[in-house]
Length: 70
Image (cartoon, rainbow, N blue to C red; front, side):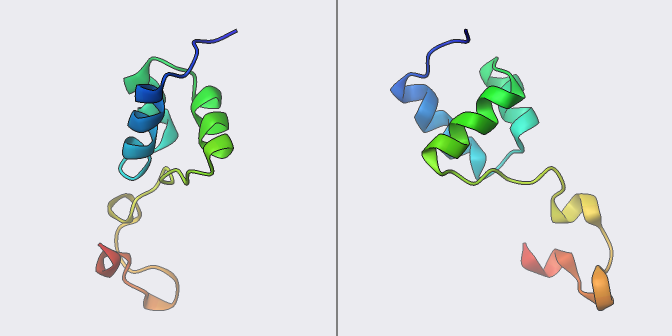
C-alpha cells in the first residue's frame, strides 16, 4: 500500500495538475504515476496531457496553430 495523501499533498496535486503531466507530478511527489492519476480521478482534477502545445509544435490539423492557445 502506498503513502497516504495528506491535505497538503492534495493541494500540491491540484496546483501541479495545471502545469505538469502526471509523470512529472509523480516524480516531484515521490509517488507512482498510477497513484497520481487515480487520486486526480477521485478528486475530479484534470491532469495536463503529456504533450503541450510546445511539444506538438507547428501547425496542427487543417493548419490550426496550437501556439495561439498559450
